[in-house]
Length: 111
Length: 113
Image (cartoon, rainbow over all chains, first blue to last red; front, side, top):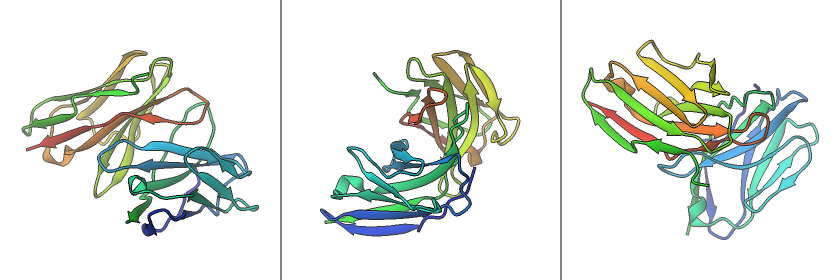
């Protein structure tokens, strides 16, 4: 699986959009981009995933660049409950869903 | 659905004792994963099963660790003998093979004194 690079920490004002970047310059054509988050003391939670098109669900939007070497997770209106560590992962959707988590980005939403 | 269930939620034991962590995956899921999380090493994959068969145990730190999945609805992670450096939060996750996402349990916080 390709490696990812994320900033270790970010702040965001409550109510504003949080934009979390991820670099995955060695991503291969059949690898998807996944985002998970982990709120303190809880297990990681799936947010969204995509291959090359932008994706949106009730939690967030995922913007993937045309060359697929980077992506951005957007939380459109961040709340205090969005304070968490966000993990960007790239992986092949093979028969076995092995997921490798990096250090992630610690997002702090500030009142 | 109740989600992934783990027990116990907290475990405190003394060095040298055997520890058994338990996981019940989401009904219908056929892949199960055990992770360990520490401040120093982050979230590490220990082992994963597909259709109750261990597929990759390369993340298991040493022979003191063993995992079993006797049926589709139950898995255990055993540490024998336990050591203080095993202190961590242990997560279990499950998914359907192929589709998108892993669902994580609430974790077991293990403290070995």
